Amino acid sequence: MSTTVIHRGGCHCGAVQFEVQAPARVLVQSCNCSMCRPSGYLHLIVPASAFRLLQGAQQLTTYTFNTGVARHLFCKVCGIKSFYVPRSNPDGFSVNLNCLEAGSIESVEIEAFDGQNWERHGESLAHLSRQTGRASKISAGPE
View 1 (cartoon, rainbow, N blue to C red):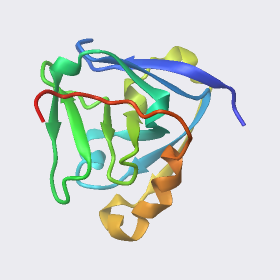
View 2: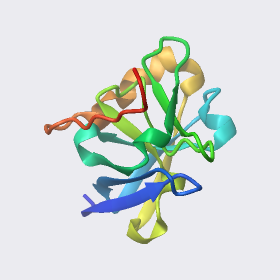
View 3: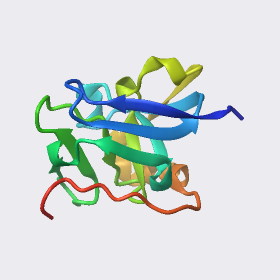
């Protein structure tokens, strides 16, 4: 198992910044769904207790669709989705590997995830956010 470190990241313009505790050697999922494939999102899914928003809660806007469980959070200034609450892990966060600063990452392993057939495969990701600890709350404006 890889050493756990603090990774820092954020959106393009810097209005939204966060940190996430995760291994230095990360395993991420490349999803082929209608949201992830066009944007090149690479999922690093962590428990909510491993995520901390440092700044920019007021700059986040939320987009939901289909079941409304996933909360896609975008920076209102630059439009980047650097993290969100995934449907597969509503108790955690999916951080976009592409939005993390490179210095804390030792290596990356990318595995394919068939998000086009989410109903058959979604449960295979649920274990990634299961960890004891207090959940973080992200406010993206009025509920």
